[in-house]
Figure 1 (cartoon, helix red, strand yellow):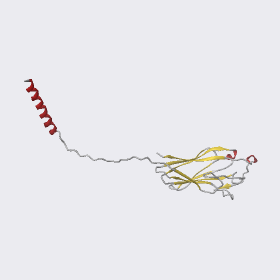
Figure 2: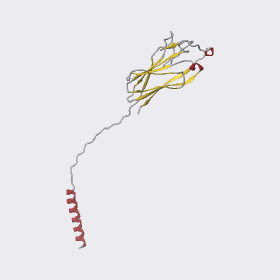
Figure 3: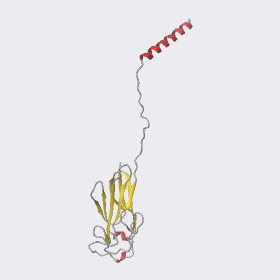
Length: 186
């Protein structure tokens, strides 16, 4: 009898499984999105020197300047040019361009009177600052993909209104770096 009872229990379990499975049946449909990709954007900075000058690459060199020499807003002494660069964001994302003076060496930096002019061609207009050649930030501007900006540094040795420069600056120089740094803006 135990065998018959076990067989009966097994039959009931099997029947319940079939009835239960049929009761809980449903329709399904599935769609796959194959080949999804996430790619990072990039920043790529291109800088070109605008004026011909004895310097190499992006560097400008001025030799034998004398009091009253200048380039830019106050007129230009023959043989002198303003320091000028065209900067382009060749990347695919928005950037914040920081331009600064760095590694200043030499006493003449206190006598050169620069004015820093920056123009973002997409936004139009010029932004300017003035001071001495000292270390620090010149300008910060937004530069989108493909956008171009121009940085001009006009300068004068001594004040253009005729103020004199003391003889202590004869034979002196100033060396400095202009650093262009493009960082993502978000």
